[in-house]
Length: 193
Image (cartoon, rainbow, N blue to C red; front, top):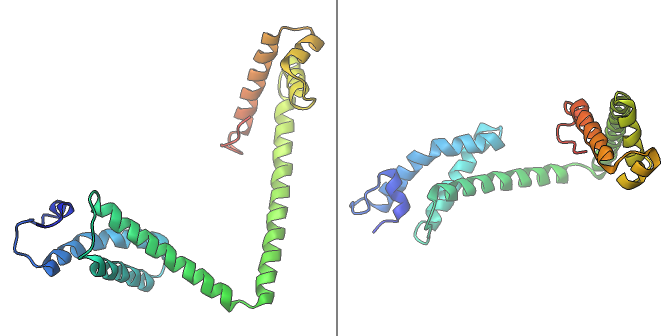
């Protein structure tokens, strides 16, 4: 009896098809889908074709011992994705080996310098936006926020110092954080205050 996952491909488990016939049906069914997956990783059409060929060769070599109980599609997609990642790793290693030590040092140093400069510029821009957003808060709200976030006071200390209730402190903080989130949402959508 043929594996159950082949039923989805209209392969009759009781048919007299040879393994080659069944494999041919699988190839015809999955090849276009694998082309899409491989092309999302590999820009070279020639390399993409080679990877797809290798996936089917490996599948053929494992065919007699293959035991997939649930999802053949997931299995062949995983094989394809892993083949793409292996190809990219190998290509990266080859390029790294071909670079001279001086070239590698140059790119490492300049890459780190560029990252440091970008981080510094980003931090300055973000700080400027935060400062501007804080200045736009209502006066009492701004005062509560600064005491909490810049002076490190807890809500109870702020309420005692400003002679307002802890609940009022909470309300001011909620309002301040809400307004800051709105002000910074376009710049850093994942910023959590």
